Image (cartoon, rainbow, N blue to C red; front, side, top):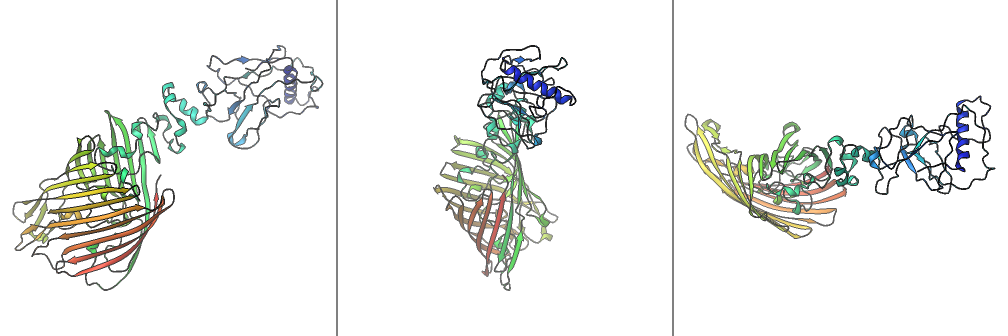
Amino acid sequence: MIRINRFTLPFLLAFATTWCSAQNPDSSSQSTSHTFPKNLFLTTGTIPEPKNSETATTAVTHDAPAVVDPAVAPAVRLFESSLLLPPETGTASVGADSYLSSSDAKTESLTEKTFSVFHETNDEADAGLEIGHLQSPTLPTSTLPLPTLATSTPPLPTLTTSTPPTSTEQAGPVQALFNDHLSEAEESSTDFSNLDLVNFQNVDGFNMPLDAPIMASSAAYGTSGVNSVAQFNVGVDLYAAPNFKNGLLIYGKNVAMKIGGYVKADFIYDFDPIDSTDSFDTTQIPVDALPRTNSRFHARQSRLSFDTRWKGGGDIVKIYVEGDFFSTNDTFRLRQAYGESGRLLVGKTWTAFTDVAAAPATLDFEGSVSSVNRRQAQARYTFPICDDLVTGTLSLEDTRFIISLDPSLGTPRSPSPDFVGHIRLATDLIQLQAAALYREVGFQPVGQSTVTRSAGGMNFTGVLMLTGRTKAYSQVLFGRGIGSYRSLPDAAEVTGGEAALLPMFGWMFGLTHEWTDLLSSNFTYAANDIDNTSGQDADAIKQTTYMAINLLAKPQDRITVGIEYLYGTRTDKDLQSAGAHRVQCAMIFDLP
């Protein structure tokens, strides 16, 4: 509290005289022996009375002297902002009839041994006014004589103080804004120091701490089998969804959305002929082509995603939408769009026939010739078999066929969806998956009913952490009538307009190693074979191979640069073959 004694009264009265004289420059009572700053005293008539029961108000007038205990009154800060601190924040406040702009104020340093009063602020930004530590030293009577007060002298303004903040209650405007919207229970459970100002994009609806379940990392979404590869993120991962916990987050009432993605610029140089200039698709290597080179610069793989989550019915509901520009004329295309609640997933995402944890970390967009890089609409349910150590998945998925027949003979049909299931063993060091596919391939000859054939295959994938910085991954794929999962024919003509399902076998092996926290490399080798029919042309694809080795660096946070060497071959039905060499450089800017 602030009280007035016989020592401080003369000093305050002198201030009052000078203040009054400043209002009337012609007054004969104007003092010339003492100079004080302008706007010295601020009134508090516009400030509501604090609710704190411990707050005391003392009025000082020209004819009502009071006694003050020579105790130290703590400093009080006045924030010169339109954002007022509510009394319940515990911050002491002193108001004024008109606030100075925050761009025109600066707090002056006060010394504990100096008897201080209000200090006029300088023209600098982001500060407030202070009442200094009011100590009461002994003042000699000759230092400041008691002036004669005129009867018209107005009373001194009322000073209002309140309980000073403790060391843990250093409230600022942002804190006060939140306190104005949060209950006491929410205030006590929310740690504002962990919040990033960039995330305050929906302040009114924010009502949860960062450790709430909805803010959990995407690693918690292993129940559906999608993007549950956090423990195997060695090197650069361009397959899994961005980490949900940090970055560009928008908060609402019991909901949060993460905006993710990256900009990826690729410079490609081909030493040999290949018709696929933007990705290293070895099926597009021409056989017996004349020598040529090619250069290409594009940013089509740049990606944008929206990950929204909220709590509903005891489960966390997730909606994920992702797209890129790897399409005709670089138009934005849909890669993934699905909703997920608990163990149920509905929408378009990676097929349950694959495991993105075993996908190679290549700069090349195509990836290995045996990897199943297919994303399609589906309805998937994942269930535990042995707790969450062993899980099973059943999925109904969209079906697409590639039948190598003369289009004039008929039309491919899709009599049923693809039935996919897998069993997955997942620990911190190893992840093994066995996936099975069953489908009905349909073809309707002109003027006839649809003819169907049963097709299917198996896909075995594995990921093993050899060390904390080294990951090994492998795949074995085989089946009949599943070539479209690798953009190859499912069936081809035999003779007389009849077709047969094509058997396929593929395999892959790779290593990803982190040399340091900033450098990593990946090596991948894969091969894919398909059995041809007697009715296929001589240049029908029989075998393709793929090899990639790269070096990636992270010179700054969220920036990756790398260089990659690629080599692939194509062999046709007549055993004619050709190879291609490529060097690809890339720079990736990840969104936070």
